[in-house]
Image (cartoon, rainbow, N blue to C red):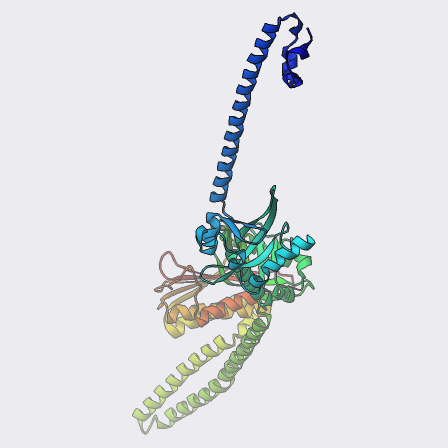
Length: 518
């Protein structure tokens, strides 16, 4: 039976129908017509189901798009090819300060400041005519205008949407006011850092240099390209290598290092004195991620201080010599004259003779005090017999003049090769003893002089009222500053601590090369 006889070609167009009708020649006409009717009913049901699924899928897609538009962080605005606004999402409402109903149907130029507002329609016409895009499909930074008239920076990217009968343009807008302000602040701070004459250096917690300003180039002689990524130890002399681990450990604990004076090496090998302030660098969560170092070249100041101290020492020696060779001799003459007068008056005026003898005795005491002062100002034994002898003689003079117990203790002979070092240590001990007497009201003072291989230690301990120490800032008295400076001049360190039994302990530790035999 020919299949075409029971229906049109349309009845057999579906390939699925053809596959199902494998045994159609065995069917009667009535059976075939019934089968075709049943098949058409199935097809109609399947088509309806597919349409319902397609509609549901389209509805779901629309809902998804609506949800995306309403929850997007970026502002999204659609306009037609005339520039009229068709839709505005909540983020765009928030950015511009308008409600969607206030903008729908208006020209997009209402959201632009002049002169872009007046030129916008020309931009669209130019694109329609030439196809040359200035923003569409590109994205750029532009200015927007809020409802209250304020102008702000924004990122804008525009996409072209081609529908069946018309075009739409979708703008994606991000308010970048905070970012631009942050960039402006960063540029301002970067300019401040770069223009500073002080070295401003950033480094990791492992000591590797991450930033290097113009001031650092001038002070240390290394360019930024030469030093970035290098370890900070390239600037540290060998005898100061131990400072950096201690500094970094303090930084890791969140502590700052304020006005630390030390020595560093330039690119040309020259050593310079610097004052350093180091602070932790923290990230947005407060975690310490590095260290910021502010270094100032104080070589000139240190040199001036050295010269002042040298002048002071020379002046003290001169005064000491004048006291010893001038005033003492003059007083000795007065003593002799008093003694002669005493003898002349002994037979005729005994009371006058006695008074003349008392004057001679007082003059002798004055000579003794003056000589003690002279030795303090210009210790002859310091040059002839060494530091220990000078300190011992000074201790005896302190006992005589002030009536306190003062003694020197040392276990081994201590030889100081450098006369300058011996002078600074002696002056340091003098200042510490003076502080103990004047401020500490001490009655017992002990001077300790010890040595280790390559090191010398001078300590002054007293039983006075002690000194108030602030952990966050070092003592600022002139005497204490001079002591610290003297220690630094000979490459040493000075520590001032409370004495556990009362009073104060001052310790100066200084490198001392082994003595050579004479």
